[in-house]
Amino acid sequence: MGRYDRYILSQLVVLFGFFSLVLISVYWVNEAVDLFDSLIADGQTLSVFLEFTALSLPQIMVMVLPVAGFVATLYIFNRLIGDSEMVVLQTAGLSAARLLRPVLAFGLILGLVVAVLGNFLAPIARGQFIDRSQQVQQDMTGRFLREGQFLHPTAGLTVYIREITDLGEFRDLFLQDRSDAQSETTYTATRALLLRSETGPRLVMFDGLAQTLNIATGRLSTVRFEDFTYDIGALIGDGGFRSFDLRELPTWVLLTADAQTADQLGQGLAAMRLAGHERIARALFVIFPPLIAAACLMLGGFSRFGVWPQILLAVGLVIPLQMIWNAAESLAIRNVDLQYLAYLQPLVAAVLTGALTWLAMRRKRPRRHGPQGVPA
Image (tube, rainbow, N blue to C red; front, top):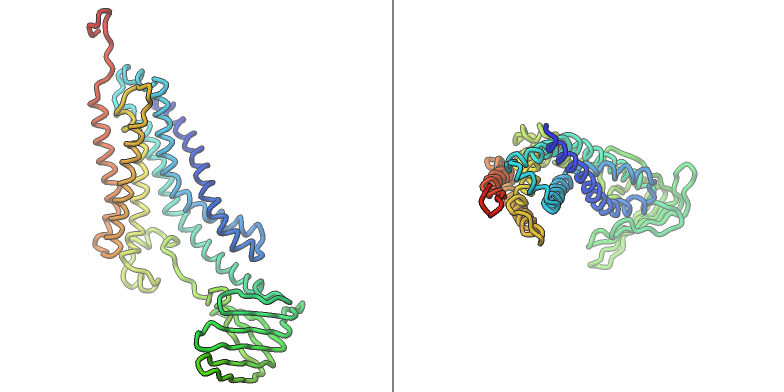
């Protein structure tokens, strides 16, 4: 690797790190607001909040790093042109392909990083995120039940507990269930206990009364009980069922999935196959946006008015590539035989990169002139 390659690659890495930090911070703040509302506001500790934000970082990085690489390349080559370094390099005989060599190396490094994140770290982090979410939700069940307060953990439910003993026993419980539009049930009990089960948390009430009001007829029915079990999984929206997210499944599971596996996981076969190929295609695609940015800026020469037309051209070429992915996804997600459309985006990006490089190489280099305008 020559001095020029090391110089450009080092500049790209430094600027890439800066823009990545900025963009990740923006996305992180957006995620942190939602997590703060759902965790801290419900009584969770700061360590739980930091754990959840850390588990969300790999997926954020997968989305942000390609953008950071594209912006860093635009910035570096804009500066090379503005400082006339590009003119000097082109005058010295360096072709467009030679000038793009460190950008290609940078794109390959970026593709490798995104491949590791998308195929290994992000699925593992997503699985841990879902597992910890269920654990925290189970912990939240007890936090929803606070003594001396009328609580409304979800629409149609009201809970009041006069006292919670040191042993966790509830004294003088009031629970009103209005989730059914046809009836309204009110439970009162002198004692109650919160128990865990395989299907979710259960509230066991002792020595109580259940009053059911039929909304249509206005008839009130009452039932006295010595003990009664009430499923309060609805209080936290969790009935103990562990649903699978495609983002947590390993890539090899997605690529080799069959109809039986898809049915067992409650997912569509086409969606699973597409998700697996999309992870590989994303790692291939991120190689090309930096090359497109650099090639577009080399289409123009030095100008006192800057290279804004070339920058807008680079941005205008990258946006349709995302539209190509959206169109391919909408087709492949409905038909498992079209799963390889996931690679259409990186294929078009590669062709576009080759065309831009060819145009940049055909552009005439600056010519040196003799004393009387005769070419030297």
